[in-house]
Length: 332
Image (tube, rainbow, N blue to C red; front, side):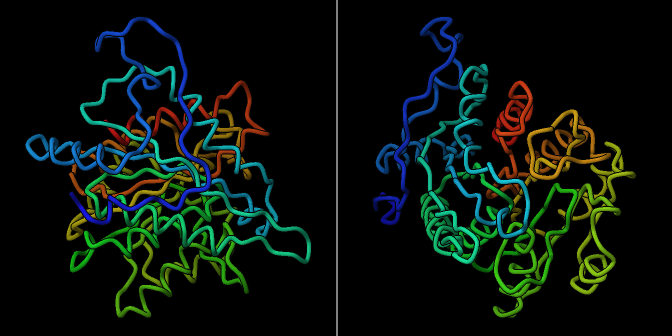
């Protein structure tokens, strides 16, 4: 048994039973709600051992209930309710995965008030600890955010796991924004500059690429900072399936592992209305799905997260269902 995986995870909410449509108990009828199991260290270890022949590592979902980063970034709060909404949308989906899936519960970030910042940094550290422990145990991890401050929590976990020691890791962001803001305190707009600075302090360069950048929604200062940091990016207006897949293929060359982060505001507003900042143009969902599939097929995916779902502004759970479809695609 992996020693790390035998430790209790520092989550704030233990996983609850899932629910959904019931068509039967046989494997041919399985839906997500019937397939997902609550995380248990011993069961994860057994699933990891059993997956050694197929290479289909078990997956673990982790919720990151955070509004604090969006609040600090002066956006529309409500993303802390997203993990529950994504699970609800996943539950009824037919389960075709050839891997075990566990639910590890949620980490909660305390939301502050004007003049009283919440504990975003502490929540990110705890979330990172959980991710690193699960990665060290051999799992494929997926975090359900939360605002895009979720990304720095993910980075802390990816940077701390033994599985990234001595390997070249890249960060692929599907997003309308660079999120490279230089602010006095962390927010949903700062995570990738925080990553770049942390990598520089460790004597490394952040390998960072973005698909879906909206020129009108990123200032000239942000474009200059991206260029200074060597960020690769593809503008939303040029993001076809062909250009996006080619862009990702070029980025994957020379990398050993990739952390994928999806900010749902990369999608058109009619596809993903339930976000803090709905897109004016956006990248078509079929292009985003193609990019995810290309990354998964490379065998280099280490960790993924989905951020910025805001159920308060969703329409008929449209954005939650898109997020669920993307989680299913990531784990296919």
